[in-house]
Figure 1: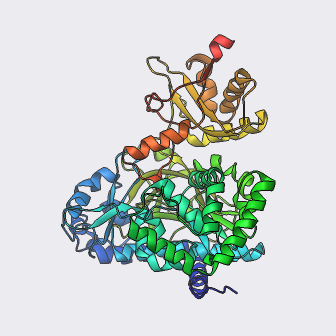
Figure 2: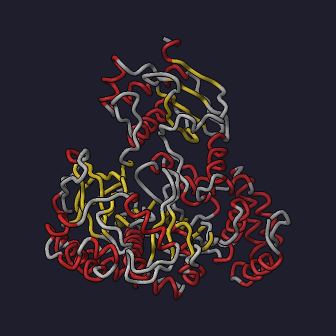
Figure 3: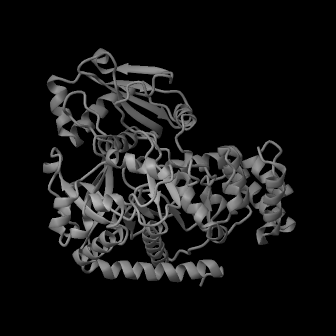
Amino acid sequence: MLDNPALSLLSVYASHAKQRLIQKTLNAQASQELFLFDLLRAHQSTELGQTFNLAAIRTLDDFRRQVPICSYEFYHHYTNRIANGASQLLNPDPVTYINLTSGSTGAKKLVPVTRHFQRTLRRADLASIGFAIAGLKQHQRSFGKALLTNNATQQNQTASGIPFGPVSVGSIRQGKWLVDQIFCVPFRSLEIDDTLARHYVCLLFALSNPQLRGWVANFPMLILRTCQYLEDYAEPLIHDLRQGTLPEWLPLDPLSHDRLLRWWRSQRHGSEAHRRHRADELTAILRVEGRLTPRTAWPLLSYITTARGGTSDFYLQRFPDYFGDTPVFGGVYGTAEATFSVCHELNSDAGILAIESGFFEFVPVDQWGQQQPKTLLPHELIVGDRYRILVTSYSGFYRYDIGDVVEVLGFYNQVPLIVFRHRYGGLLSSTTEKTTEFHVVQVMYQLQAEFNIKLEDFCITLSDHEFPARYLVNIELADGHTLSNPCAFLQQFEYWLGQVNMPYRIARQSQVPPPLLRILPSKSFSYIRQRQVSRGMFDSQLKIPHITEDRAFLADVPVIHEVDLSVSA
């Protein structure tokens, strides 16, 4: 039984949400139709609702015939007007927040958020927590307070006074009280805008609590960064823990500094005797292990919650070094525009389609070239096939094509289990071979095992001023790792890419020139992340692409060693 009343109450609500979702999976089509027609009735008087004549829709065929499939470009005019104060355009309810997409795959998009829209997304969040708690019980692990280091600083307001920013900021700020109850850091610590300072304060507070149960972050890459901060700043963190102080170099105003210290010292784990005892424990660990890692600093750690699937898989490979066998739970698969699936098992990429948060349609591969393709409903999908996913939700977006490609891994009752694979159009092609991020991540899995190395990160680009262009295999080796035979590494890259993507193997035989391996210096991808943030991308939502057709993406990054397969041959 949880000894925290807020966590106990959350557990009850989450269990109920899980059971409600399970019940609805027993009749997927009826559940989806009920969701859709409730939404259409609520939105029929909006400007777009009248344009689409939603009031006249009686059947799914009517809906598909009257409402076109659209990308964000169609909604851009409406969302700009909403930001400037117009109402009743997409939503009948007041817009309380505007989600901004990360901008990592293009220009930022504006997504209006109402309380009704937020409630439908919260159903998925609660259900996922319910599944997580049930899974932890099965593994004889405990649910409890977790570490969160997300930035919750309010970005700004529109000209009409609507707050806007990343989806995670909006969600956290709307649940300030809950943050203080379920995480081991106060909400105020998440409002520290400086990335290093925020992580330092959050880690300091977390280290004082030896009973920490979980770590939570949007993406695995962000968790690995926090692990690196823990290693790099182990000694000063222990020093400040022992002294009960915040370092002078933190860019905090005096009021925030004093409030954070008062909060810390008021906690059960913040007393002077506890802090000194805990500092002694951590000093002993550091002396024996040579570093601090989550599994040594918090031996009761039970779970990690972060994104799975897509580009995340590459980073998850490094988790055992920091977390041992701590299970990784996927939470929900969502974006600023929608929530698409609810994870139902620990250590699984698959998620139950979020049928309480949106009405979903799927575009099969043979329809991807059509302007208005024929779509399938959730119960009509085939296990093993891939589809572009469309969503209609209380955001006011209808049959919205976000561009995500998902794979069906199975079914939970009548509802598909899906996993994100890659972005539609997020392809690398010298000619026609269409290499995806999923392809290259599989290749790098194999190569790291084959050559007994770890990569900090990688990105495949195309050469400039060549046609057809060659693949540039840009890699940064993890600290302490060297590549003794880079030529063999590149040859095996060729072999394995040809195995997972047959069109590449065919194109290489007659069209695509040999690839080039480029080994980048240490901290290259750290620099790239900082560069992207300085260009306006959100730190907590930033994803580094593993493939990109932007041939200048790495132009400002030095290369310490190159291997040209055509010269080596």
